[in-house]
Length: 276
Ligand code: AG3
Image (tube, rainbow, N blue to C red; front, side):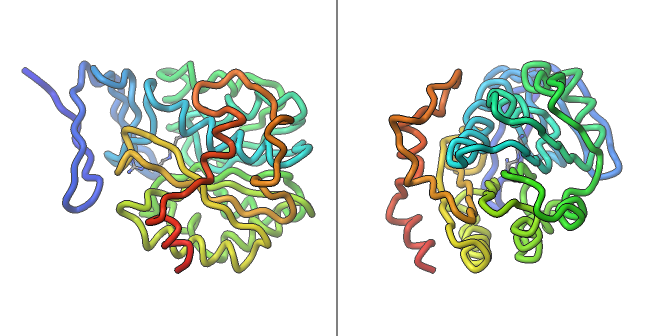
């Protein structure tokens, strides 16, 4: 018998992936946590039946949500990551030798536990001594830590349920306050194909609060549309002014100095969203 996992990506669009074996299924205080081994993508994590990450395409998202920002800031020492309990982003952050402290605020202990057990390739970064894991609410954490971080990464779920607040103007204001005087943040901000209103709202809020706002994109096959947008808000440093020849060549599979630049080249239909 064939077993398939299906995510309703929109009301009218589904993705189905053939399952080899269900490895874990549990209900945390916040969401349904499901780990499966799949034929096409290897081990895959879904929260409330929404695909978060998998062994095959995780590198794209995790490299892009981290390195573009970390290589835009000339000297990021203190980094906060909100969400991303699977550890993929932390693994990438700790590749930066200059980073002295990584504070990882994840609201759901079960996601961390499942990552440690079923996704060692992602959660490996948790072992780095610079990483401090806090099981807490990221929204409250930024409110309570003013002028603290050089970079903040928001690796959230879709803007439904517990993550809604992570897409609000009030939150971006608190992020601004929580950053040091030349700090910057990067957030995952959905796909311009199906969530144009989310992107428009984020762009409007971030441009109101930060002097520099930039959208960049990457290909993530398991996410809706396969085309994913990230938003950067920066107080001082512009990712487009970074000297490509000075960008480090890193141990990565998607990110490179050329990709750092080309990710900001947006198709006209996305540029139209930026114009409002
Ligand atoms: N964060 C979730 C990105 C949104 C995916 N949306 C979807 N599949 N409908 C990913 C967490 C990875 N660390």
